[in-house]
Length: 505
Image (cartoon, rainbow, N blue to C red; front, side, top):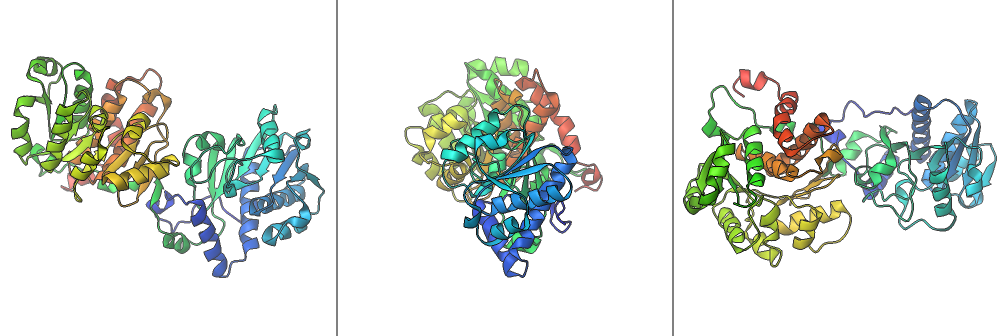
């Protein structure tokens, strides 16, 4: 019998791995090749779905909507188990029962009840729908009978919906809606989550997502190559900087934040974020005429004039730099960005600095050396100005990282962090309250603070994004950007124990 949990043998990071649709097919095939019959995997999947349903719902009139492939086979298993337990259950099939093949055909034979044609009318009287139409196997937009059924199911009043593997109509890899898609309260998937469970709008269609172990060995998953993850502390927690009793502020990095005169708040928010995140020293570098504004509002953050930038860049102790928030768009910002890259600083390039390269992004990309520690933090508009790539958000972020040589933080409610080496993480904890002025500037400061302390770029970007979201989630309604820096210590306390400090680690 399947268990809705991961095997104890999987590492914490391994459990965060996401499987593409193609990788899941390979995992199934490899498991079958080692001697586990496909029908056993199907039985385990159906049992896991039924167990999840039993935990949430009392018996009620249930319709199982089955498709023509293995997802439909899973549905037939659910139907048989429900019938054995006395649930009032009916099955509606898209296509002919005689056309089913392989394990799906065997699962259908084992179900002894009536099977009706799939149609919106089949929903009449149902209070629970188990969507086993397509799962992750959908390769084109829904149309015809399937689309009409999905739209009718979403419009039905008082109908709870549980999806098998993936709500029908959602792309398993990209999270896009393919014409129409089931709006589920619960989705039960197998082995690992898929990117479409996390990327928007797919995440909103999934409801709660449970992952069931159906008997695919961890060794099989490991051999698939794990390079896409759900962003969570287990992915980067061990790399978080931990201050030492034997250390000092100069050992925790000296970060520079390049600011402007007219919109100085952006750089000030970022500088405070970098300092709160643990950078030993932070200097805000701004036009001389604006320095009194910076000095009046920043206590622990030092200030310097932009006229002194060349000297600051020449000092190896200034090891990390952020440019973009409030910098203004134009040749001056472009030149300062290129100078920082040439000086070998770990660079966070954000906002105006990104837009300053919109006319010729190749200049920026060619200046990021092979070993250059660089993080670009675009929202969708800024991304479109720099990168001419198409596809879902995960595909586009990966392509941008490969093209630029930098770690990409493609921001949004489903922020994707992608590294040039192909690794990627999808973030899911950011609440809508982060859509407020200055929140992105604080995020850039968080990344800068971690880079200044020597945290690797992909891990630093992933950690900053998750921490940023967690602070906002805990604060809740009424959040403004200043609250993000003030709420940061509580989240860091939850991530860092005292052991490292006690032992000088």
